[in-house]
Image 1 (cartoon, rainbow, N blue to C red):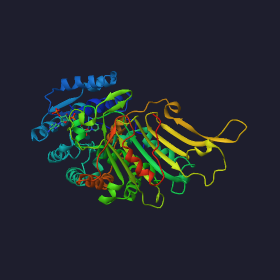
Image 2: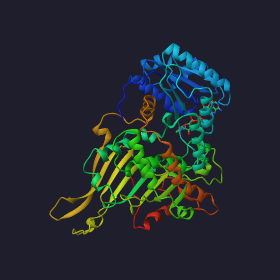
Image 3: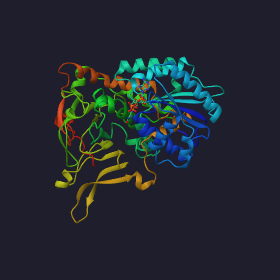
Image 4: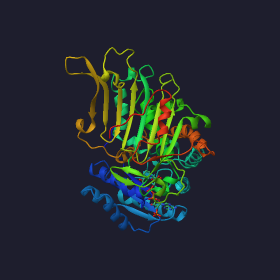
Length: 496
Ligand SMILES: NC(=O)c1ccc[n+]([C@@H]2O[C@H](COP(=O)([O-])OP(=O)(O)OC[C@H]3O[C@@H](n4cnc5c(N)ncnc54)[C@H](OP(=O)(O)O)[C@@H]3O)[C@@H](O)[C@H]2O)c1
C-alpha cells in the first residue's frame, strides 16, 4: 500500500452512470478526490447508461449529487461526457470508443482507461465482453493501462461466480480487474493490519493458546428500506457474510504477510480462507441459524415486519439475519470457535470483531464482583465510534481487595481529527493508481463462495435449517444462542 498523490492521466468510464450507486457514492467520492487535488489535471469521466441525457444534463446531475464539491470539482465536471445507450447494443460501444478518442485529444487522458461496472450484476459479463470486442480492454493509443472495476455482488453462489469470472477473464486479465468490497476501503478495517503487524504486544497472544473464541458482528438497525426487491434476491448470507465478513475475518486471523503489497496481503488472506472449514450440508444446518425480522420496535418507534416491506413477498423465506459457527483449521486457530452474525433491524448499528481470551487458570479473588468478571476481550470496533477497546479486571478503590471489569478505549476520532469516509474515495483512487491491495482477487472470491455455498445449498432443501422470526429491535432469534451455549459461550452485547 503506497501513498499516491495524484492519479495518472485517465478517462474513468462509469457504466450505471444514472444509477443509485453513482449518485450516492461514486460522484461524491470523485468530488472529494478532486477537492483534495488527488485527480490528474488530465482526467475526465464518461457516463454510460440508458437514460437519454446529454453531456450537459449529466454534468448538472453530477453537480447536484456531489453538491459539497467546490471550485475544483465544478471545473472538472465541465469536462464530463455522457454516452446514452443500451449495453446490449454495439452502437453504444462504438460511440464510447469515439468519445474516448475525443477525450484523449481534448483532455489529454493519454489512452488510459478505468471502466467501472456500477451497474446491475446481470450485465457485468456482457459489458466486459463488449469492451473486449471493441478492443477497449487494452489501453488506447499511447496508453499504459485499461482496468475494470467491478461492484458487488460477484456472483450469487459458487457456480455463478465461477461463470462470471470465466466471462470476465475472457475479456480482461486478472491484473486488470479490481473487485470492490467497500469494507476494505474503511480505515478501521485497514487498521486491523496496523494493530496486528505494527505492534509487538498483540501478535504473541493472537492464537489458540490465548484466544478462546472470536466473534464478528455486523449489525444494522435499519430494515431493507427501499431495497426490498433487491434484498429478496440476496439475503444476509450473500449480502454481508460472503463478502464483508469474510474480508474482516481473513484480515483478523491471517498470518503476518512479508510485505504490505497486493500480492503478499492477498496471498495470506486466501491462505486463511482456505483453512476455514467447509461443512457438509448436514453440518451446515447444525452450525447456522437463519432468521427474519417480524414487526417490532426500533429506537422507540414501531416498525413493520420484513414481509410487510415494499417489494417483499408476503411469504418471503429470505433471511435478514444469519449466525454461523465457523472453524479455522490451521496451527494458529485449531479449536477456537469463530462466531459470525449479521442482521437487519437489530438494536444497534455496529460492526466489530471481538477476541475473547482464556480466563486465568485460578481466580484467587473473592466476592460477587470477581465472580462476574468478564474474560479479557479485545474489541476492534469498525463502525460506528471506530476504535479499539480492551476489557480487563481492575481493583475497586477501597480497603477490600475487590476486582471488577473495566475497559480501556482508543477512539479514532479522538486520536486523529480526520473523519472516516465510506471507503469509496480511497478505493477509487487506488484503482485509478493501479494499487490492487484492497481489492478482492479471483481466488479470494472463489474461496469465500466455497465457504458459504453449503449453507445456501442446505437451506434450499425442504426443511433445511428453518427460518426463525425475531422481533425487530432484538438481537436476532433466541435459538442463535444455542450455537454458542453448546461450548459454554454467549454472544456479546455490543455497546451501541
Ligand atoms: N446502491 C447501493 O447502495 C449499492 C451499494 C453497494 C453496491 N451496489 C452495487 O452497485 C451496482 C449498481 O447498483 P445501483 O443501486 O446503482 O443500481 P441502479 O440504481 O439500478 O442502477 C443501474 C444502472 O445501470 C444502468 N443499466 C442497467 N441495465 C442497463 C442496460 N441493459 N443498458 C444500459 N444501462 C443499463 C441503469 O441505467 P438506466 O437507469 O439509465 O436505464 C443505471 O444507470 C450493483 O452491482 C449493486 O449491487 C449498490
